[in-house]
Image (cartoon, rainbow, N blue to C red):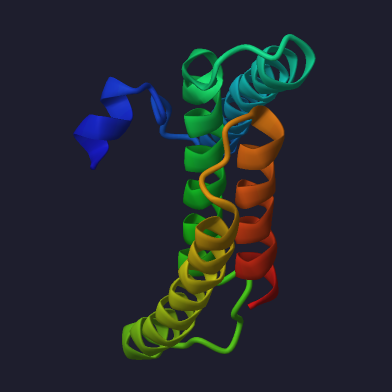
Amino acid sequence: MEKLKKWFSLSTQSDERIQQIEMKIWAQSGIVVLLIAFADFIIRGAYLHRPFLEWAASLAIIIFYMIFFFIKSILTGIYETDINNKEQLNEKLKEKMSNTFILCFVAIGATTYKYNLPEDFVGWLSVIARFIILFAFL
């Protein structure tokens, strides 16, 4: 792990204060990239009405960032403070993730089957919004 951190220059100092500053800079850089991808997604998809393949990479960046953030938040215990050991974490993750994903995919599959696959920006955005809303509330 240390080799990977040094390769990405995540911890080049032994001082913890400076390491925290470096991590803060990396986090802010990630937010800037996310905002640029979001602006590209909105401008190309909603404003210019470009084809899906032109703004798909930006959408993939946004989705990957959100999934990574939520998984990392769950694993670090931000949302579930009653987890004390790895067994409790694994049980809680299996319980929540499996039920949530199954329900989300069933709901989205049913609506997609009823209304077919989306063909424009608004259609894809509504499918993504449904998935996020279902996942967030379950």
